[in-house]
Amino acid sequence: MRLSQYFLPTLKETPQEAQVVSHRLMLRAGMISQSTSGIYSWLPLGSIVLRKIEAIVRNELNQSGAHEVVLPTIQSADLWKESGRYDAYGAEMLRFQDRHDRDMLYTPTAEELMTDIARRYLRSYRDLPQSLYQIQWKFRDEIRPRFGVMRGREFYMKDAYSFDVNEKGARESYFRMMRAYIKTFDRLGLTAVPVRADPGPIGGDLSHEFHIIASTGESLLYYDRKLEDIMAESGHTEVPVDAIMDLYAMEEEMHDPENCPVPASDLRQARGIEVGHIFYFGTKYSEALGANITDFDGKILPIHMGSYGIGISRLVAAIIEASHDEAGIIWPESVAPFQIALINLKVGDSACDETCQNIYDRLIESGVTVLYDDRQTGAGDKFATMDLIGLPWQVRVGPKGLKAGTVEIKCRRSGVVQEISLGSALTQLTATLAA
Ligand code: 5CA
Image (cartoon, rainbow, N blue to C red; front, side):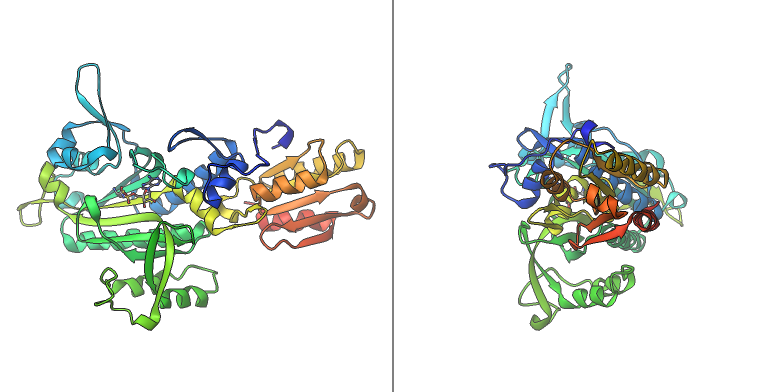
């Protein structure tokens, strides 16, 4: 992509309304634009990142054996009246009537709709276990939307639902999903801490939240120091799913200073951003809606269910909270909107133009994504823009270097700039980045 033709409305000034760094950087990097309170438009750069996160979440969910569906965002209130949540949900639910005066709502979550699908199509223990998920916009009329897309009113969520014959099966599904979450967050370049949680209005007795540690996090959380040791020992090569699962298999109680199973000296306290939340709620919805199956011995029993959320739009902000510096965003490679920033330091100079075009073509050919700054502006402006939008690598091409046959490569994360021969620059970049 040529920057001169791209839609990248970056801001030099720090927007006044933004209180946290991720919100400031998303506005400054031209990723989002507020439409109205708690509701945002995703501009091209933001939209690419959102879709990349979505693709990783989808891929891990598919590998865990779940099947994707697409459910409507507008639902009839009838199902919610059956479950009892139409009255219980409160002011967060956006309610309205259609032209026939029928009560409708915009989905804040989809337990009811998924339970309805289960009662229509799942008949016997032979149809189970089953897991379905969707990636869909949700609406919750939050009393205080804030921090940009971190706590929006409209937000993008992956919600999965598991269906099992009994509690034993449901717990297996629950912990299979937990494994998929640990892998997903690792692929997103994040260390997510699972903590035992209060199921709240979703209901049930087994629930974990997944948090990204960040000083701006809205929740205070406690976790076992061993988790840090496990992560450190792994050397960050492959996420140690088994060791993490073993730590949590103790099924520790929610934090309570009196009865905490973790000794005080091992207890870590931090602020966190909740990026995922999983629930096992048994037969709460299947009983209310009559989603039953025939058991092994012919008994009719309600299905055991769990639901599993990941805040995809919130993750964009959470990744930035976890990975930025003074100059801007530092994207993990897996979600970067482009892998390489190609910077032409003297547009109009035939050697610079030709070399850039050549590098650009060769990178694109080898499947690498490139944002090429071909604008007629100064070097300082170009460096600042690329540092702000946080692409992992910058290739800087200028007349001085070209005379010596070299270009500069900057690693955004380490800040290290290397002067390197043109030929080896291309081999090095395509070798590390080619898909
Ligand atoms: N039905 C369950 C599981 S699918 C559910 O709705 N869980 S939830 O309420 O915890 O939401 C799942 C995830 O969506 C949260 O962990 C959070 O990451 C994200 N989320 C929730 N509310 C918002 C919001 N207002 N803005 C952005 N993301 C949100």
